Length: 103
Image 1: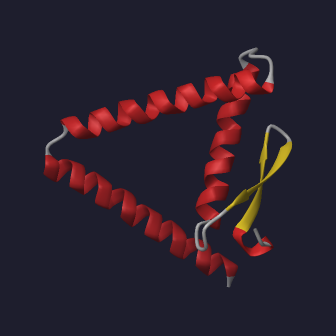
Image 2: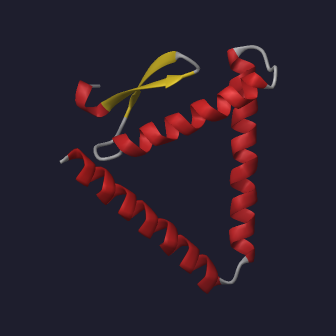
């Protein structure tokens, strides 16, 4: 793995180098920040031990993902499509703002 296809992320004050496909660096960093925040919330609820914190966080995120997926499947197709398009549009705008701020 070369430096160009790996990214260093920080989770609970520990550093991890992970592989990253080209063009996905920002998404990976955003995901790592979200995961770090979720892990800190679990730790702050008096869960002790890195492995237990990681497992509890994974369970919480999996539960949230399944709830969201289930809710999306229950919506009419046109409403689901509109929501997905809205998310895609928001991501595109966020990407453009990020690119403009780097100039």
